[in-house]
Length: 279
Image (cartoon, rainbow, N blue to C red; front, side, top):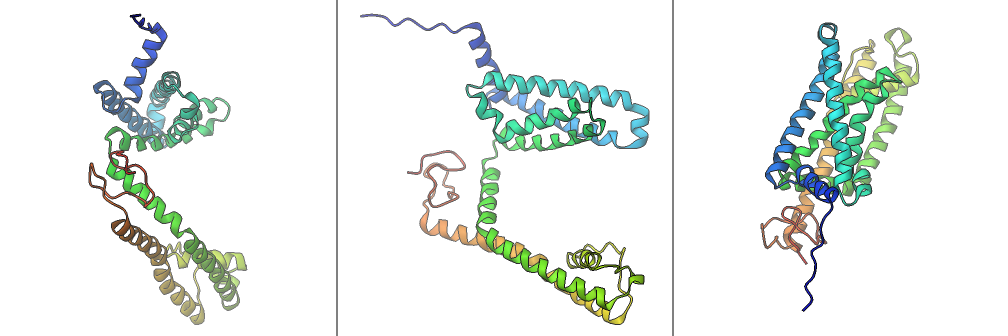
């Protein structure tokens, strides 16, 4: 018998494997420690960006805040490079959702050399907090997010028609208010009147423009009441779609044999919660 010789891994391959276990490992002790530490650094970086916009604090601790932001940016840069090196498919990571977010989170500080105002965009690092679901392995939350996404996609036609209807209503009521009210009350043009109608219809009510005539106030009251009904419509459409999807799954889709959870769609091949093959 011919004994197979063991393939010796190079130093780089062993190092890459160890980095992969630490950075990408979810269930390993080292991976969990790294992920928790990463989450803390992300929270700290977002806090620093917020504090820098407070004038009194920025005047007093500007240099310290900037230094801390650069230290964190360098840390994120090294982490980003290590993620690329340690994965077997670098391009897959680079163009993945988390890969793009990781890149965007470090770019603002480097761009600030050329455009100082871009540094404030570092607050986009808050998106990296989405890694919490991966760190804590919250499969149920991921499943609920996927379910909501499917419901919104299924309802997009109805919602588009509804928004189009609201757009037309805003133009018509805005034009009416321009005719009824005077320029003295702030309705100086139809676009301005449409802006007022949208603000009132969405129950925001900035108060920068207000009707002064009795007829104008009556129309405004009608728009306010209409606004409460309009807010409920998109919510009702999505809720009905979620309820319909759940009913269909109970009728047609079997539970996962491993964790007993319902699949997100009738054609699902794997369980969204534990990954068990459903076929």
